[in-house]
Structure formats: C-alpha cells, structure tokens
Image (cartoon, rainbow, N blue to C red):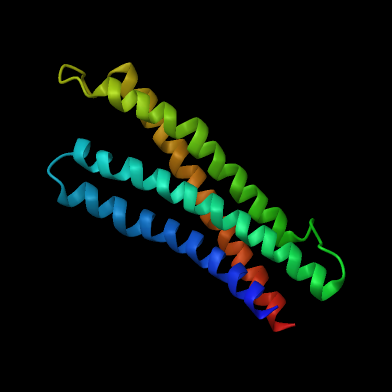
Length: 158
C-alpha cells in the first residue's frame, strides 16, 4: 500500500509542480529573455501542451491509485471523496484548456504571424481573450491542486 501512496503523491507533486514551474518560471522567463513574443510563444505553446498531457496522465494515475488504495484500506473505493472530485475537476479544466482553448489560440497565432497584422486586429483581440481564459483555467487547476494537497495532508495527519 505504501507504493500506491507513493504513486498518488508523485502524481500530485508532478502535476502541481509542473504548473507552478510553468507559470512562475518558464513562461515569464521566456517572454523576458527571448528577443520577441513570437519566439517565446513558439516555446510556450508546445510546453503548455506537454504540461496538459502530464497533468491528464498524473490525474489518471492519482485517481486509479487512490481508488485502489481506498478499496484496500477501507473496503470501498470512495469515488466521491473530496480529493477525487477535485482531481476530476482539475482533469476537466485541463482537458478544456488542451482541446478547446489551446487549438483556437494556435490557429489565431498562425493567423497573427503575418507582419501586416496590427496589435489591435480582431485575431489579436480573440487571442488575448483566449489567453486570459487559458490563464484562468491553469490558475483554477493550480488552486484545486493545492486544495488536494491540503486534503492529503489532513488525511495523513489523522
């Protein structure tokens, strides 16, 4: 059972740590050290996609291992436990970002690549709105993940 606990915690740490690193280190650094936002976006976009996949895999590992752990320890999987509900919400928000928001942003980025596009263009305005949603989604996933960490800490102290 300790191996299951290890996998549960590893999945959570990888997901939350990845989001934290991306949001507070990678993206801001790239946008300040690279010569233009186009190059920074060329790095951030695939990094964000990898982060989403890492999160979805981590979320699945967390849920599977946690359900098995609960079955072994409590003789029932407890699918509606608070940590499971929060992880499910995190997975949903991550999937929305990966499969709805990111593809639209990628398409708009390609549209904005033309040199004659002005910052006030319709494509730019749409991109900025989607970027704001992307940021909100990642922030919500991070906050929910911190909530799961708090639940796990409380559960381990009992």
